[in-house]
Length: 354
Image: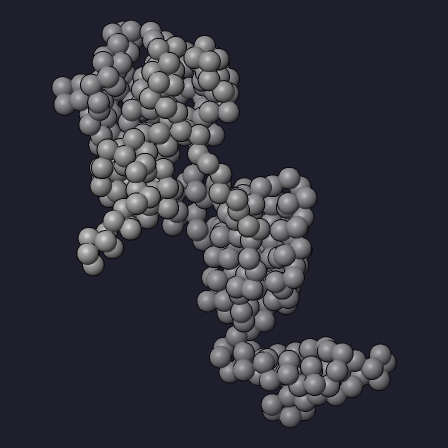
């Protein structure tokens, strides 16, 4: 056999075979339908060999993703890792987990997306799958498991931008009035006036509050019944509370004799689970306030952001207050909610050239 490989036609079935030795001097065979395809495959294989690339014929997408997630365990937050691991295990591996990694194609990925849509997943969720899987395949290219990233040729399903549910000032007043004196009153104030995430609210401990300074410190978040550090360093923050939120917090402290542990704890001292909060507190409060049950605590967070931006508070300040990883998150999510900006661009041109 020639050092640079050879191409020949197999007598048994007429298929063309490219034969060569890889970087570890192991004989490899590539099968194609035509001689031209076999020659092209041989040239690519020899280039890979010269670049130090070693094909991993038996490595499946599923096994690779397991290895990849194990390597990420200490590089992302615990919550992010759990979400991504569950997403890949339940969504991706079920469709393409048994595919050989070196043979995964853009067609395979597109077919998976069609299957996920048929399963009832939203384009937004599939967009998250796409982002994580593309990153995994990018790392596979860097590790020389594959030559190119098949996700580079794939676009996820188009996402229709949904209008955010943002409560009016009157609706917020009605909601806060409906929970007046409730043991979870502070959660509603923190979500609507401070813009906390629901997991951040329910993970608060008494050592996180400072009534003298009127501040709270965000150090953890609650997810699937477990408290963990926030996803990003920017989510760790100290916030000054509006007077109404301070008054609600004072009422909570007066209500609870044992001011230690979690602010919103069960009888066993654990933080109240998010799903239980939704069922037994959040939805009954919406009904009492005459508001649609489609509204979520995140709607209140959106309302806080929109209110601050409409009060001409600078985007970086709003972004830092909400705990975003960068200001672009706030710009992308909330800029369209700012009132009275439609004519600013035209006005600016007139003033510059007038």
